Each structure stands twice: as C-alpha cells, then as structure tokens.
Amino acid sequence: MSKKIIEIKNLSYSYPDKTKALSGIDMDVYDGDCLGIIGPNGSGKTTLLLHLNGILMGAGTVKINGLEVEDKNFSSIRSMVGMVFQDPDAQLFMPTVFDDIAFGPINMGLSKDDVNLSVEKALSQVDMLKSKDKIAHHLSFGEKRRASIATVLSMSPNILAMDEPTSNLDPKHRKMLIQLIKEFNHTKVIVSHDLDMLSDVCNRLIILKNGSIVAQGNTADILNNQALLESNDLI
Image 1 (cartoon, rainbow, N blue to C red):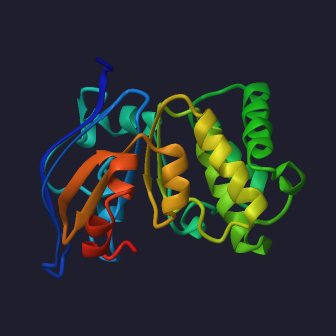
Image 2: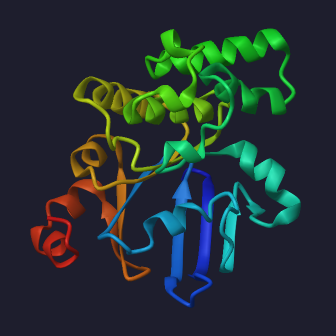
C-alpha cells in the first residue's frame, strides 16, 4: 500500500463568530493520490484545505508526512505543501511577476542560478514566461491565477493543495492546467466546483456538507451517483 501522506483525525473548526465550519473530519490521503473535495458553497471545503499547512488550526489532529501540523513544524510542512489560494491577489505581493515566483525559492536558500531556473520553469509551465517582468496587479484575473500557481510550482512541493484552480481560466489555459496537474507526480488535493476537471484528474473524491464528510470514494462512483450529487446540491 502507498505511504500515508496526509492524516486527519477528528478535525473540527469554528470561526471567531462561533460558526461551525468543520465537524469530526477523518481523512487519509496517500502518496500519489489526487483527491478532489466537492460540496455546496459554505460546506467547509476551503476551511479544510487551509488546515493542511497550518493557516487554520482547529481541534483534532492533522499530520503531513508524519509531522503534526503545529508551530514547531510549520517550516518543514510549508516546504512540503504548496497552497494555491482561491484569490490569487492573496498570493501575489511583490513588485513584478518574476519577484513573486522567485520569493519562495529565494527563501528556500537556492542559488541565484537555481532561482532563475525554478522561476523560468514554473512560468513556462503556466504559459506566463513573457509576463515575468510585468506588475502583477496589471494582469487579468486569469493571468493572476496562472501566476499564483507558478509561485507554488517554483518551490517543487511534495503536495499540491489547490482551491478552485480552474476558475476564470480561458479554455486553452484550463486545458493546460489539467495537463499540468496530471503531470505533477506527487500528491494533490483539489477543492473545486469544476466536476469535469475533477473527473479528469482525480482518483478519489470526498463530498463535504455542513462541515462533515457525507460521502467518499472512487471518482467515477461518486460522479455517477446522480441521487447523491442532487442531494448535495452538486447538479
């Protein structure tokens, strides 16, 4: 059996206003898995994703490659988990696109030459190399989305965690992203409403509703269960 990469036990989380976002989540993800997380708006999908590298921390246990997500392990865990946020503006904050993509590799201690190689490779993967000297806030939303994905790819993470990665992408770049996800040989966890994309890339799905896992299984089995999808507002 493949190695367990993500292990979540009895995870619950409430926001400061007492809104219960997650309740008793148990979830295992294995090396090489591509896990899709689906569910209606407000079901807790993004909240769950943000627990993978300690941006949010609830009650329960989250382990990444055997390391518990806690303060002393943040550096190691965040080097393993590449997080692509739903809002690309949360990921782009440097003067130019090149600087944004280089930020992670520089902080990993790479040499100048290796930083340049990492940046060029990541930008090429998302078809943004020609935009490397542009100012990020001058980009279209779709271009920002692709640049934000490159900020994560440049650090060569072991786990790719993505929140709505295909939103606002044109058909060409959506297709490119799907191919990129397929070529990423490590573990992937993807939150999305794009069921066609998830069908194409994921081997497993879980359905969240009201902060709880209501179904999980093989991607085809989940997506072919029309009654299940209808009851969870997914079609």
